[in-house]
Length: 353
Image 1 (tube, one colour):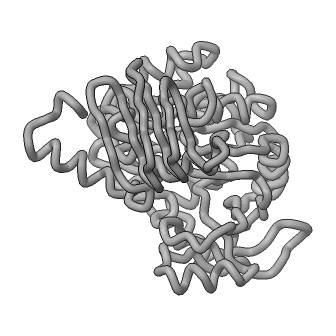
Image 2: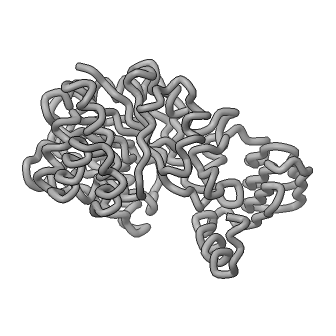
């Protein structure tokens, strides 16, 4: 068995504006440690794969940033999407390329912008998943919920196939608050972290069954790499969850879930998530840069532009200074930063995006 890491480095990360910009989205930010989220993801999986078996899929505008962030990567392993078409075509492109070099490639597909506090446990879960995947199953990692989260999709476990490995009964949409509270109490439910493991050839066969237009387009690109610029932008834009995993679960039942509990996993989905993954002061504040919080509780104060940022007597606010823009928003509305981005677009302030 030969494992290949596929790091998905697309996306704009608008919920982290003003730190995240078009040319420097979330995966290139140092949100948790002094390394970027992309570099952390690479370091986490490098003991299993290493540079010869690591691929990064990204947009054209970020290819140079990926190469600069991960200079040890083989240049040809930075796979540039001619257009953003969501995760099914992106992962399919990586599968096609990996198969050229390794007919037995097992892909470890990872978002590049998550945080995992216990990388050793994570690697163990990936190795378990790869062992299942080598027999042809499509495998996903399920994270035990720690709160009634309405922002994630869920997986419902079926029968246990072997220790820590389960059938998947259903992929469940993001729930309302009451339903999420029920899921928290039900051991059958896991968070869908968007982490997948499968043989490259098994994925392409699943694409042939469920997304034939994607499969056929990738086959043409495989035969003639120069055609990617014409073919790839015409592929359906669809996620691997909707396009492959859900219909595959309903038809062949060859979807497995590896219980990946107690990893300290976070998708670092907004500024509100930073207190979960950063060191806090005595009053629960997450601070970064030249920041000072006095008589503040449960705040996020980040100074990334070199200026001193001070806060006094605040409770549950995010104060984010990038040097050329300042954001102040309640922590419980941090997901709504996208509305600020849309308002700036409408006002012609693309210079700040």
